[in-house]
Image (tube, rainbow, N blue to C red; front, side):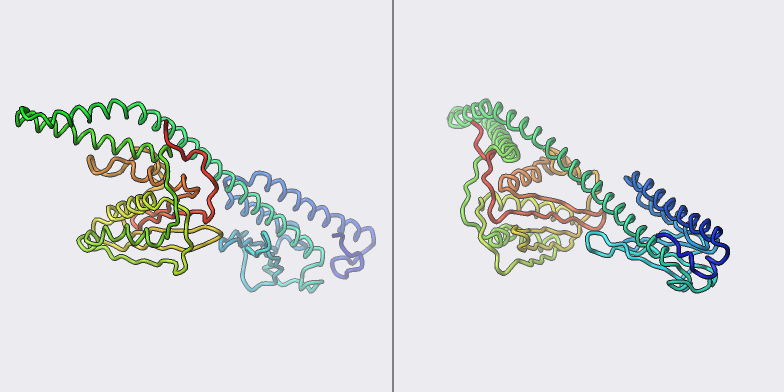
Length: 390
């Protein structure tokens, strides 16, 4: 990237002066790249600040720094130095990340300068600008890697927490099952007593109803903990969805909810438990309906993508904050009123989908609605944890 000693104008004068000027320019270029590399070492957490600082380092490295201004454009965001103007004498290089152009880095002269190799710019300045663009691409890749690492770490922590809660839930459910069965059995025996007074019979009926309700909660806990067996066979997910939705037709009409189904016309057969998948869909639809108390639109979609079957349930309801989304799949967490829900619907759905080797994700915006996306593998691997609790 050394400067040409024979260039007129800038390089005119005695050889000693030309050598000094060339060396000075070279030092400026290397200093610019060095400072940019130092900035790139601390890219985590503040990308806007990083790119603004890089832009500020560019003009001093050019031949006429007093008239130079720079701009970095990345994914539509702009980072400019003072005095940057459109339509001036300009030199530009693309920022290419993983084979895709993500933006450009530009240098302009705000005052007209004499012609050089590339307009008023030198060939060495072109090389420098290309090197800066490559360095910016490295910064972008590093930031993407850090974001992905943080996302995976958060996902792992969430999975570990769910696994711990699942083990606890399975243990509690197992310990409660035996005494609960005794309570239910003796209460049902009392119901057969002919001499039982009317008031006592009502009390026994309440005991039986409470025990049955508790048993359903235990079943859901075991599903969440993946401690109940699945009975897998050939399943058409589209038929499961239509069957689940059919249960709510009257509810849709009553609540003013518009239903739209966009189902893949060539849905491959899954090896799954149709009853459990129906429970997942019912839970998601119930949540969607409850999120739209004044009516709205419910969209259910299926498609095949990358060896997976995707099912998305989207509503136009009240939506959720990021804090609520982070706790959705924890047992007994609910935003509903008292006696309106147990907080086990989504954890159970998560447990069922996981036992099928799939994933369930949510995206939501307060006031705009939510989308739950289920991904199920077409050829799921055996699940060693999918076994009954003994």
